Image (cartoon, rainbow, N blue to C red; front, side):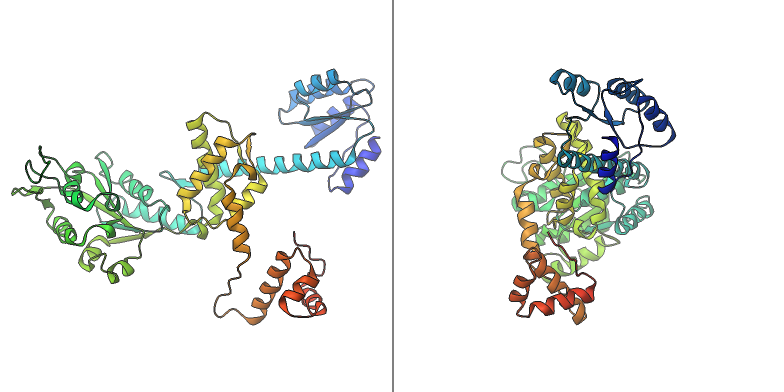
Length: 442
């Protein structure tokens, strides 16, 4: 039985090491790393349950599968309590065993990846609460380090959900103003009738309902940093007044006459392209040039997909603390969905999807069924579209069209040929030229 098992697992791609009894197995375990132990229960010198106990003492991570001809429920329950990952009775169901080994191999690889991600997060995978290792993010980290300690005005651009406020907070945190207030205001979220009062403050009686004097966000941020989010959505008639405050470092409250000196660093942000916003009459050119002393452009998540595993791990840890859960990570199948999806909502959307997965997951790993159905639907729609950039060499474009068509018809060459209007022989010859005669697309 031992030799049959060794032959089977070797055919499945594993490297088996054989031992005749428990004592010999322990000696081998001490000499070389072993991912999994499959052991009989009834053996001379040391039975399988004692071997299981001794192995668990040596390594809490040791995975043990027990095999016996005397398959009783009590024995199986006892083995599971002592840490066995599964229990097989003779004759062994080899198909079931292979499925289990594949799953255990996936779990082991996932744990290794998880350890690598944790190491990256602890070393250079994050900065001031911003997570990323992509070259574009490293450049942004460096820019924050260089610009943060200066008092220059900064304009942050990027799509919605890319983390513009996090960059603003990081700039504040590494500046001499870190001990002062950080005040954030979103110009697009305030009614136009109230925004002037919110930003510049007002005096009592300045308008109906102004029963008291109120300091605006400039005064609230004195000696600190004011983050003006979506500045291009600020009413056009207020932008000259904002520019004047930036130039003169003093303001007048709505309805007031007194000039109030302020000491505030401005960090502004917009999800519009500044050039387009100016062209559309949304942003004054003189205000743009005043805000754009230093420009930080955040890339969309789709342009830094290598950061997705880091972000997922980071958000899972946050959600575990928030919801008192113990989710380890996402499974490999779920991870593929994360990597394939376009993420139009960027990091904010990713965080929301992760939080949903943490809440609904039924195991330590977030699986595809724990994710919103629209992710897979969007990926399927993406796969129906082939994008060819202008200037792509003809042969490359042809190859992309052929392979994507084959993928869409599950590698049915006859159907692909029919859709493309060519002979099956043409498809086969093309695949041969690509070195893909054994192509199998699932």
